[in-house]
Amino acid sequence: MIEVNNLSKTFKGKTVLDNISFSVAPGEIFGFLGPNGAGKTTTMRIILGLLNPSSGQATLNGKNLAKDDAARSKVGVLLEVDGIYDRLSAYENLRYFADIYRIPNREARINELLEFFDLNGRRNDPAGKFSKGMKRKLALAKAIMHKPEVLFLDEPASGLDPEAQKNFRDLILSLSREGNMTIFLNSHDLDEVQRICNKVAIIKGGKLLAWDSLANLGRKNRQPGMELSFGNTADIEQAEKLLTSAKLAIDIHRTQEGLTLTPAEGADTSQIITYLAGHDIKLEEVRKLKRSLEEIYLETMKQETR
Image (spheres, one colour):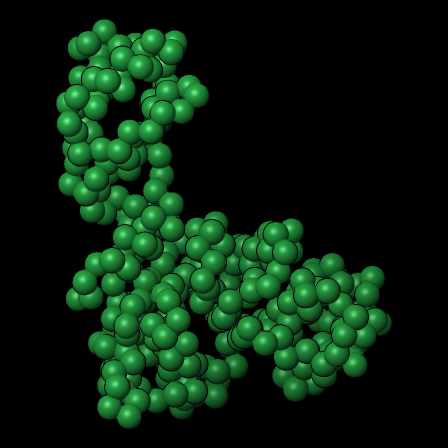
């Protein structure tokens, strides 16, 4: 759906994007991550046709949005700024944007969106009286008024309380699943990205450091950790002593029911279970621990740029 090929951008002699390439598949929820100034917004602006690249190209379904009105009509955008008119009601805001998009069956589409976003009961209230979460829902309704194929979101849950964040995540997932919408998400909220994204790209200093599924990124560089549960305290203590004395390249943390093992880069944990069994240590349960996106992100940030 989205193809970014060898994209570079220079501002006043400073390289902001340095030959980055990635793609986003149809129906995917794609997370674009990086610190402030990494080049995320510049990349999104080039994809949207709002900024010309210095070299390379970015296309949507093979079309350059800067040159193709028909392709632009298939895109929805929600920025950090809601773009909602406080003096207008929820209904009036949506009617205004429906007229801009020249939506056929305008009233039916407005009613559908108000119902979907659970705003029907407040349809006639001024948007200025809405909570932050309700305004974000109204802004998202505005962004998908014309049923876009691709939705670009820039920090969509910024400033929302935990309940509103969850509601907003659920809405994004619903749009992806039920509306078959491709979603491009710029976000600093790693927990939000981990919960909803199929694939992520990590950018730093204009260079692409990583681009893959969360599962594949979690397996790179080192094995996932393990959580070991034991039948009694004596086995926990004995296992901790054995593993510590073995001087394995792992961090060992004691828990109430057992041990959590976190391997260092390149460490081999495949023999740990056999090693403990050989010393008559009885394990009740062994669970692999998934690496969090926060761990993956922080490790990637420490890497030298390619």
